[in-house]
Image (cartoon, rainbow, N blue to C red; front, side, top):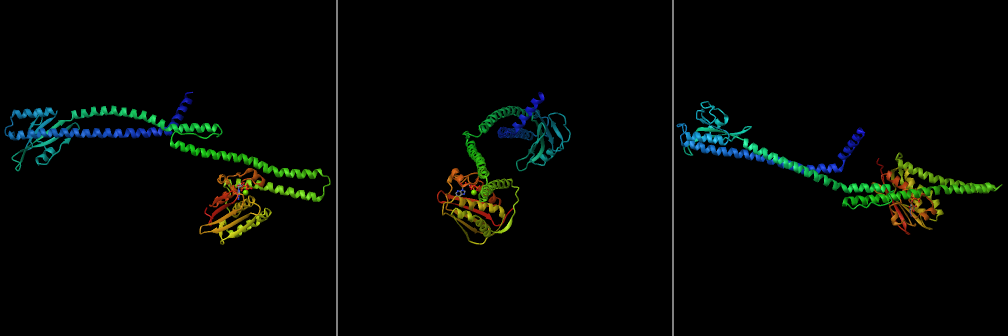
Length: 483
Ligand SMILES: Nc1ncnc2c1ncn2[C@@H]1O[C@H](COP(=O)(O)OP(=O)(O)OP(=O)(O)O)[C@@H](O)[C@H]1O
Ligand SMILES: [Mg+2]
C-alpha cells in the first residue's frame, strides 16, 4: 500500500516537473527573486564600502588635527604635554583603537596601549609616510589602520618630523552591516514568499486555457468528434481551436469518404458479380441453349471479370504506393512517345464516347521517369477527361518543357468540377456528384493514384475548372529525377 502510494507520488512529481505550470513558476520566481537578490547584495556591498571609507576619512581628519597640534606644541621636544597625551587617549577611545606616535628615527615615542614605547617601527606604511607618499588606509579583518605625517615649516618647506599611526576598530560598522543584512534577509524572504504565491497564481491562470482546451478535446473524443471546439479563453487558444476545427472537418470528411468508399467498393465489387450470376443462371436454366448464346454470355462474363479486376488492382496500386516500399524504377524516357502510347490506348474509349482527343507537343522532351507509375497518372487524367465529358466534346493534351521541368496539360470540354470539390478530388474515394459519378463508374481512387505518382517524382499537380465549361489539370515533373 505504502509502496503504491509512494509510486503514485513519484509519478505525480515527475509529471509536475515536466509541466508548463512548473516552468512558468520557475521562470516567474527567477525573474522575481534574482533581481531582488542582486539589488540586496549590491546594496550591502556599497553600504559596507561607504561606511569603511567614512570611518577612514573621520580617523584621518582627527589625526590631521592631532598632527597640527603636536607640531605646533613642539611635541618631540616637550613630550610631557599632558593635554596632548590626554587627547591621544581620548581619540583612541573614541574609535576603540590605538594611537602610536613615531619619531624621525622610527622610534615609538607614544603608544596609547603603552606596549611598545621605545621600540623601532619599520611598518611599510610608516616608512612610506615618512617619504612623503600619500598613504591610504589599510583594512584589516576588524580594523582600519592609517599613517598621518606630522610636519613643521610652511607649505613650501615642509619637513616630516614624525608619523601618527592610528588604528580604529570597525566593530560598530560591522554590527550595523549585520543588522542591515538581517533586516534585508527578512525582506527577501517576504519577497520570495510573495513572488512564489504570485507565481503559483499566475502559472495557474496562464495554463488554465490549455487545461480547458484539453478537457474540451477529451470531451470531443468521447463524443465521437461530432461537435466543434469552442474555446475563447485567449487569442492563442482561439486560433488552436479554429485549426483544430479545420482538422476535425477534414477528419469528418475522411470518415465520410471512407464510409462512402466502403459502400462504393462493395457496390462496385458486387455489381459485376451480380451480372455474372444473372448471366450464368440464365444459361443454366436454358436447356440446350445454342453455342452462340453461350459465347455471347461468356464474353459478357469475361468483361465483368475485367471490371472486377480493374477495381481490385486500383486498390492494390494505392496500397502499394502508400507503403512507400515501392522502389522507383527510373529510366530516361521520350515523353512525346510515352504520351502518344497512353493516348493510343485510350482513343477507342474516346471514340465510343464520341470525344475527340488531340495531342499537341511544342518540343521533343526526354526525362528521367518511372514510366509505369506516370503512365497510371496520365491515363487516369485523360480517362477522366473523356469520362466526365459531353457528347462531341474534346480533350487536349499538351506537352511543354523548360530547362528544369516538363509540363503536361490535360484540358477537356466536360462537365467541370464544382469549386467546393476542387480541394477534395485528390482525396481517395472522393467523387463529385455521387449519383452522376455512380452512373459513370469508378471508385474515386484515380486522382489519389495520380497525385501519389506525381509527388513521388518530385512534381506537382494543379487543377482549374468551371462547371459546365471544362477542366484543366496541369502536371509539372522535373526533367532529372532527384532521389
Ligand atoms: N476531368 C474531369 N471533369 C470533371 N470531373 C472530374 C474530372 N476529373 C475528375 N473529376 C471528378 O473527380 C472525381 C475523382 O476522380 P478520380 O479519378 O479520383 O475517381 P473516378 O474517376 O471517379 O474513379 P477511378 O478513377 O478510380 O475509376 C470524379 O469522380 C469526378 O467527379
Ligand atoms: Mg478517374
